[in-house]
Length: 122
Image (tube, rainbow, N blue to C red; front, top):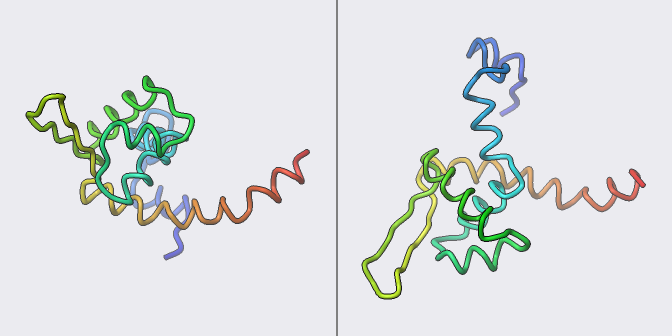
């Protein structure tokens, strides 16, 4: 399925322009932490501490902020269970799973090409 930005803009006038909501969503899902949290949740339901370990290098503040945004965007579901201590699970929604399926080929490409690209850049 090959699509160009020009085709997207023809179908959705104003898409990805300065004031368009598409820019906000793009920022949410394509940020470094957004991508890594989404793809980690693509492997299944995780608790906070599991996400913190799996998303190497993320601070507690950034994890909280990223999860809050992804939940508000309808990509991640947060379930708080009434236990002591509190138990909170995070999982992808249907929309989140669809997004991750589309993102994984990009991540695979980056994984295959990152070393060569960074060597050429230095």
